[in-house]
Image 1 (cartoon, rainbow, N blue to C red):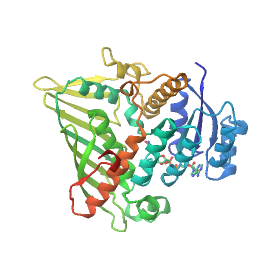
Image 2: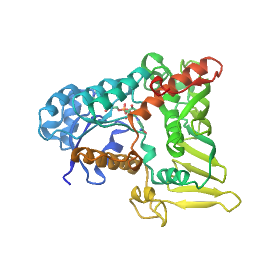
Image 3: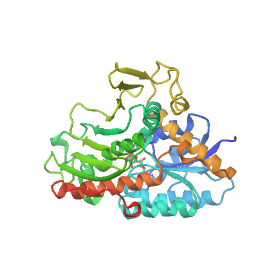
Image 4: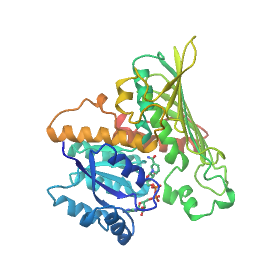
Length: 384
Ligand code: NAI
């Protein structure tokens, strides 16, 4: 197969997430970095793009990139949108409508209505729209999903998910413009910490259990009082397969770094995984001894084997999890080019529908939090 052509909007020099996308897309030799509008400052974007080898396909802005790429025979096969949140909808919509497949960073949109529009456009155009819940690409997360699906822990009773960090805990720094905007509704929308991190944990809960969130009740707080939006939230939820969910997310948890973790307790066993130790999965079958499953060991699931790249005992981390999302997308794009229909269960990249579900949960968390934890429907109207 010839390499697919890949482009990126945002993710410029010094950005947080750009390097992980470049590493992830390049890892398997499936994509070639061919085009980009990498920075909000045109001259910086062009300069950086040229240093990345993009030549005259280093563009000064996404509109220019869209127009120029549409005219090419070798236009990009996939565009990653790695810009700040408020621009995701406009850029994703324009590229989907312009005939491109898109991988959009989370949150996919700022409102439920925009999320529904993206799902509709993807359906109408037939273009692939993925959303980067990249942590679902970890090999042992895929294995956890496979174990739960094949009944290793029985019917799921309780899911406990969290995503806590302490990087916004300094009250004396709360007014720093680089931090302040995140808690300002005019720039961040209806939610800060849940929309930024909580949705990763909630997506993970759905991903591994194969169940969707139906309703939720939230207790939100601005632990640093000058903040309008929440910096800590506890969310209880229910899932359509009967599981009970508990989720904690925080940005004031001093000492926590990138604390995304998930525990799933079923009728006959429990599973526990954490993003900061992604190469071990803890499995406790009821009445037996605790087992530590190592990424890369023999006799794991095909899902785990497919997504493990480095020999056992060598650490694998986040850019390789992203690489698994790109591997899924390369397969999906290849199938589409060949006119083959792919079984969605065999290709697990997070869909636009997942991005939409997250937006509905974000709105429900914000509203429930304001209404003293009232239980609210967490589903987007489209899926009720
Ligand atoms: P950042 O502020 O570090 O970088 C943003 C980049 O986008 C900069 O290079 C900036 O110049 C560029 N940019 C801004 N507006 C642009 C425009 N209109 N056209 C072209 N380039 C533009 O932001 P960061 O932290 O990298 O976040 C970007 C997105 O990635 C956010 O939506 C964030 O939520 C998401 N993210 C996702 C993570 C994940 O695990 N999936 C982790 C971190 C961030």
